[in-house]
Image 1 (tube, one colour):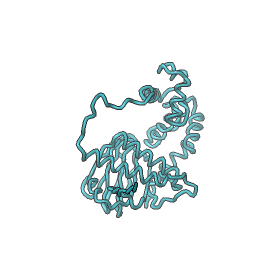
Image 2 (image 1 turned 90 degrees about the vertical axis):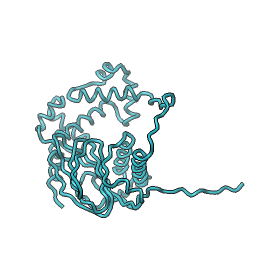
Image 3 (image 1 turned 60 degrees about the horizontal axis):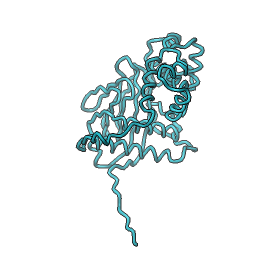
Image 4 (image 1 turned 180 degrees about the vertical axis):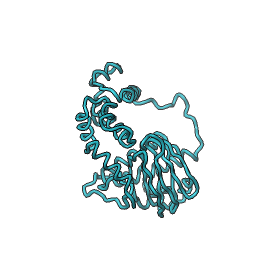
Length: 298
């Protein structure tokens, strides 16, 4: 029997990757703007931002993404009280289907948000340059980058672009009720616990509190979060608190002691230790680094 291969068409091909950035801006940050001969998209992961292009001014909210075609001017300014987190990915792509993204602002689906998260995760595994420098013009690859990380960035980026084009161009067909996918075991209780932690972010919470209030056993709780996040529930809650603290620092409305009190820490010293354990910096060092990036010029 003689087998014959079939050629597979690449509708989207990424020719070059220029930047993968995840920025945590201060609430008063303003990027002066630029234009370059490759594609770029800006995605708001938290807060809101104003983006000016050659043609218009846009306000982007959480979960929205704007594409800039090659040589299109674009800048970015934080707006509102919440310090924004912004994802910026720039790349070269000559595929004709990229015309779809011209002058487009799209709202990401959960799948697309996850793909962006996976791009950022793989970038941290293989890129030596900091991902939080908005003025970095050339990334450096780690000498000991994890096997496959560079390729996965390209694959996830291509999948992201394909997903957005499909979702906005193909007819929407409702799935029959009897064929709806069944949620994975634990997803309902997981979402319930995440909501519980968000509601109690300003309090001191123990494992016993979480188990009691959510009717879940300690071993089941720990197993659930180790499967989802590769860490225990209290470590996860600490990281949530620190992420909130970073946002409050960038908004520049409270001092460190007030932030410590606001998030339910017993002392400013304990807060500082937990903050450094998660970020590698003290709150003061983090604030200084954010301020320096905000004031940096080309």
